Length: 252
Image (cartoon, rainbow, N blue to C red; front, side):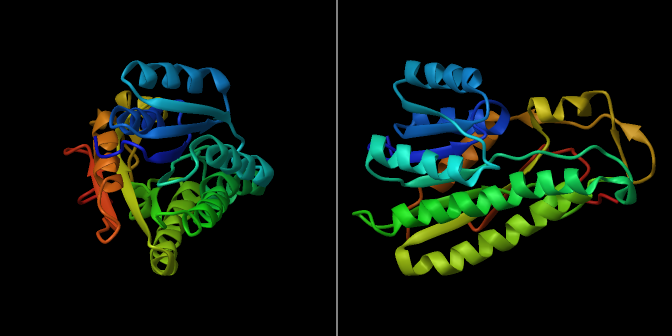
């Protein structure tokens, strides 16, 4: 197994894409620190991964709290001795309302969760990766189709996901000095609790509500595992993994 002896952190690991990625990593031999707000889903993922021979560390974490993030990485280093992969995945959306009606407090909540937390996690990962032996590691950010193209009434989510692309590029550049690679996976319509509403119909730019096709989230797990297992002299800077028939190509 390519991940044998390697350690990873996955944020938002209790459900959806984070769960799928954590299980893929554990199934390949990684020791994975599972971070998320709620302890019970994290423990369920840990149990499932351990049944497949993986190793897990459950760390309830509020990614909007800098101290909580720093404690996550300290516990990971204490438990595993090193960090090879960070999957920055935790994210939220805002209510689908006209831009001018979105409360600034809700905007800040999305920015803190989707962007600032991603930045702070990246900082903490770099601090470990640049000083360990062998040096280096890989940071993979969860972008989104919304890092390219917005949905109606999604200004906060879309803005943060565009900003994550800038963070990915800056990390990929600045990380070179420490053998740290950074890439981004842009996911379209993975079947998770966050996309359950798509089955009944999602608002389109035309004003219509139509159901959208989804794909199994395990495909995202496989994609991130591929990125994670590349040697550090190779990098997938951007990968789009999407439901084939979703309205992205030609959207709007």
